[in-house]
Image 1: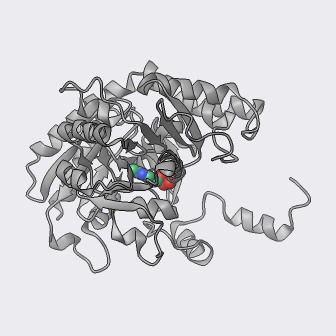
Image 2 (image 1 turned 45 degrees about the horizontal axis):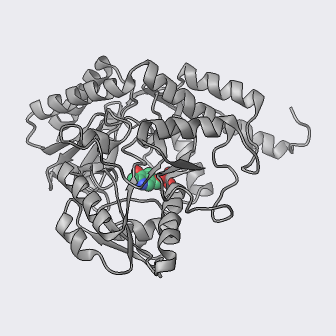
Image 3 (image 1 turned 90 degrees about the vertical axis):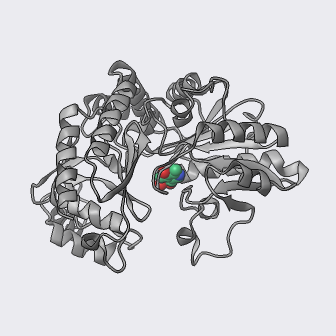
Amino acid sequence: MCSSIPSSALKWFSTLKLEMSTAALIEAFGRSVVPTYARFPLALVRGQGSNVWDAEGRKYLDFGAGIAVNTLGHGHPAIIEALTTQAATLIHTSNLYLTTQQVALAEKVIGLIGPGKCFFCNSGAEANEAIFKLARKKGHDAGRFEILTTLNSFHGRTMAGIAATGQEKVKKGFEPAVEGFRHVPYNDLEAMRRAISPKTVAILIEGIQGEGGINIATPEYLLGLRELCDQNGLLLLMDAIQCGMFRTGHFQSYQRILEKVNGKSFLPDAITMAKGLAGGLPIGMLWVRAPYADVLSAGTHGTTFGGTPLICSVALAVFDTIEKEKLGENARVQGDYLKSQLIALKSPHIKEVRGYGLMIGIELQAGIPAITLEGKTSAALFVMKLHELGLLTIPAGTHTIRLLPALNITRADCDEALGKIKQGLAAL
Ligand SMILES: *Cc1c(COP(=O)(O)O)cnc(C)c1O
């Protein structure tokens, strides 16, 4: 042990061992961590596959996967192998130099979307900052800077991210807002058409709104937006931070949404990705196609950590495993099963089940007394009921819970989750 660590720090470190109880952690968080999150009273200490264990040794089935991040579940050997091998070889270089891992990941993504170039960063919000700067730079000389987004969207927590997000609650208290963002209803092509002004440079949407409650763009909307952007010389930007990475069965949600119509020629101008790309490690990225791929020229944007050899080799291992184990197909098959079984429950408490692949929203009826409490959403309260039954899910909006399990989830795990959801609904 390093002798320069003061004994008081060592003592503190030893109290933070895995056996720290949930109650002690709640108290320590209250004392030492800025309370930006309304955290559930659940302390997780270990994970394996799609199971996690809390500080008291209770096991949970993980159908949240760290908000669509743990693409291969917990403790996957491919991730451990890539992480340890690359950590022993070269972790970080900065972007002053070239690395094979970064360009290999760029080429992997280009192969799955289409010709273009990639920029790497560390989170979703940061990827969206890059897409906003791309749009601003592209429109700059023509005096165009405005980006149209949709109501109930979510685009991250930076100043521009909250300005882009179509939800008042994320903006409140942080005014004045970054200029140049306006919101229109989702899936409403006419509203978007009417909103375009001489200052507009781009339209940004999620293929499936995640935080907003699993709202899916229709094929007509996507194709209509493409046409609208082409007619008006606007960039069509997609935030695929949550709905990408094969969660819907295809790499990109628009590929799934458009598979039944003639959507082969559809391509956005730029796409942001993050969450599940590196299976649990922090990553963000931007894909942008020609002729816009060089708009963010040398010196116009950057980040110290973006695209390190470590993160990129882990992301490559995740892509590799998805291909080898056909996890896109698994997401589709298990997702279809989950959705059909949830609908078959015919629960009076469920208003609607929505989603593609392993991105499923269960919208609950409004005003269910058992999950009505001042200051909490019924979505969060139902999620807590499911915690008691040993299932992790994620609230979305006020009345919807999200199922976002790892892409290698098994049929047995799906059946177990369905049983717990059924039990949870029965208790309402
Ligand atoms: C999570 C999310 C973001 C923000 O990503 P962070 O990594 O939390 O900054 C942006 N857009 C969408 C659609 C998201 O789901």
